[in-house]
Image (cartoon, rainbow, N blue to C red):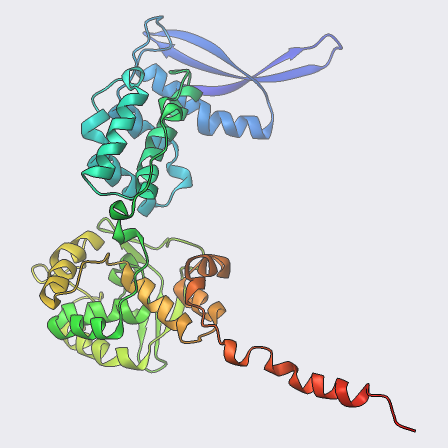
Length: 385
């Protein structure tokens, strides 16, 4: 199947160019108008959106029969993921697939798209709230996968109605808020307690996360050429996502150089003794001496066990990053610099997430104007005759 341009004369004698596709079914050639004028924008849309949709229809026998086969949620969700893959990072795609497999597939995967009812979605989201104890925001995030998939189906003329639009929103209660989505920084005594029970590489890895603010994938992607002991810097240039080494990071500002703080040096020096001669990566699995596969492995094999041993309530591993950033800000570090070493796209993101940690010193507020007030009193006072 491919796009071609058809040229016809209009009534004024000019030429009109329109976009068409041709394809073959059982050896017979067919042509179909896309009902679009040939412009750069339309051609790009046809190439990136319409053509993949038509190929999908052709594959399912929908272009040569009046009895359309309605795909299942499982089939069309995979198509939807593929359709939007160009606008999403690999880590985002991986997260969406993981959420679909865990929370959606068993309930909806086997159903054809036209058989999914709004009432079923309502019951499903109630289950996520009551049984899984997920927050409203997290449920809406997962539900968004269904919403996008059904919108794609409408765009591709498979359905006419998106059932998600008929579903009422959830009422959030305090006891169902998921703690892993909230920022709850670790206190200094908690960090010390965690490090005191961790050993060897586990201790060094956790210390690195707490004292660099690196994302988990970025930390796993550190190699020894990224560590400059002489200048005390760490260069962040790659990450490990789902077992693959990626040179493309989360944002354009993620590739960065961050300082090695004094407290971290002993941990890095100790880790150098453990893995410096074995592999280019800092942190290696005990069994294979190769880099870790994903953040999930660190959470399961190290983080959960260490928190339990330290008798500290579970918090998401990503909270190490939030702890680093919030601690710097609450201690008066320049927020622009903190945003830079955190790898945020811009300081606005840092402010939106961490503004509550900016210290307010009301005691001396306005003191800088005292001298001006004095000058006004002396200079503006009327002179006595």
